[in-house]
Image 1 (cartoon, rainbow, N blue to C red):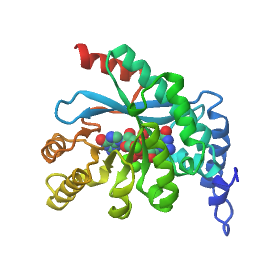
Image 2: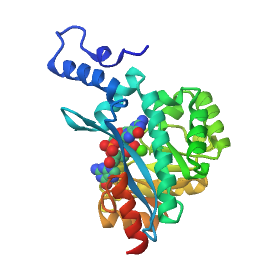
Image 3: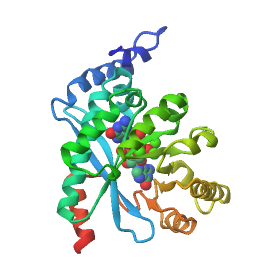
Amino acid sequence: KRDGGAQHRMHRTAAPSAEDADLLQLEADLHHALARGELELHFQPQFDARTLSVVGAEALLRWRHPVHGMVRPDRFIPLAEASGLIVPIGRWVLDEACRQAQQWSALAGREIDVAVNVSARQMIDDHLPGEVAEALRRHGLAPRRLELEITEGIAVRDVDQARGLLERLHALGVGVAIDDFGVGHSSLAYLRDLPVRRFKIDRGFLRGVPADAGGARLVAAMVSMARGLEVGVVAEGVERIEQLDFLVEQGCEVVQGFLLGRPLPADDFLHRLLDDAFG
Ligand code: C2E
Ligand code: CA
Ligand code: CA
Ligand code: CA
């Protein structure tokens, strides 16, 4: 079912609202966005929490709409998921992220990792592992340098299906991170058994840290739980120096957030990398 997206969410009882019409138009436009070159990736640096050197980047999708300007992913990713367009778009994201990571590494003279968001709809597509392998091969990127970020919700919905897929990805050598860790309500028992490389603590948990003692204890518990499971930890949404200090104290390895770097177009990210190395 390809076109059930915005239509599906329209109110059945009331007449279609202006908001619904906007969504329908946006979804129609999205069909052409990829072919017209309106999609681009921005890259948010990820840092070694202790040395603060850049270790990688998260690829974040942007849509430069000819009329509406920059459309936020929170607005169009749900449309892309509902319509199935996320599959070709996601394939492009994967390819483009691998291409960039390989190019930066060559230019910066050291390995830069890249993290790519994978939506629920892509996770039920049997072709995903093959496409991942193909993107890595095409750009000559070592598999361990690619990380796929999936949300806890996906992993929980169908544990056996998720496990099968994660095992195929693991066998390829790519890493999997559980995005928005702590937001879902997954059972730890089952997270323990999945081949996952890292937990990515959702930025919502960091908001009041460290002043808010309850929040601080929660984050500390998540980091120590990850350590117990021998899984790495990334924290996202680091906006203040006190949050960073707290995370380093707790032993969080990788940090990402506006304090250290916003998402940047690929060229700007490269400049940032080169500044980091030489100046
Ligand atoms: P996410 O995966 O949780 O990505 C992190 C979001 O937090 C990004 O928003 C990023 O710009 C923002 N962020 C990073 N650091 C900070 C900070 O210090 N403070 C605050 N307030 N925000 C911060 P963005 O780029 O708008 O992306 C929103 C969501 O859209 C992502 O959330 C992800 O779920 C989805 N998304 C983005 N790109 C893709 C993609 O290529 N594929 C899929 N399936 N989803 C994507
Ligand atoms: Ca993410
Ligand atoms: Ca997140
Ligand atoms: Ca999120």
